[in-house]
Image 1 (tube, rainbow, N blue to C red):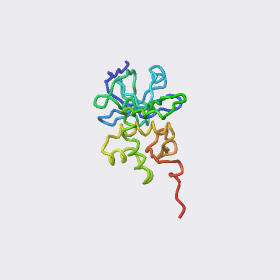
Image 2: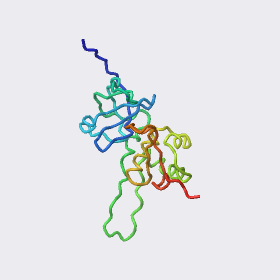
Image 3: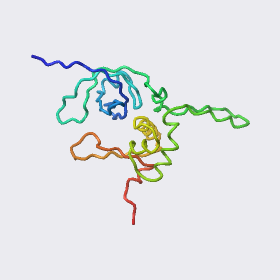
Image 4: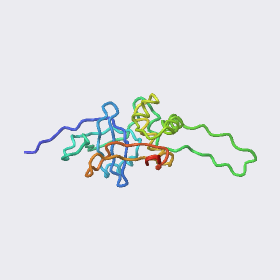
Length: 189
């Protein structure tokens, strides 16, 4: 006899994606983690920062820390912050051919990254920190700051280090952020 588990519907935000397209997301309200297969990520062109409506079942992989396994996803606008899903996009730059004067600067899109980038960079001048601590310091939520940090990392503005508690772990226990990779190294006395 087969035991079927009914799928639950959850709103999730993509926070990490491996080169293989294996994707990890969180449910912002509870912080529960959701595994999204590379097949689904490729099928729906999923990238970090995307908000999705996911149908999930309990993840029954032994010794796995990710609570849920997505069996189907659809894109969804974020419930309270309609600009968070644009955080992975970069600023558009207008090209001007031989203009006699500099064109006025195009205003930045209102994205999580653009709203928090300067404050995040200023915070990281004091040293290495986690997205949660940065979010607490800036009075924002961890998902928004994580999304901004991922976009900034893709553009080389910040460095990321994953920390594993056990040698056989696949997923990071903690993610640390800094202005540059050398900030993670011990400072000479």
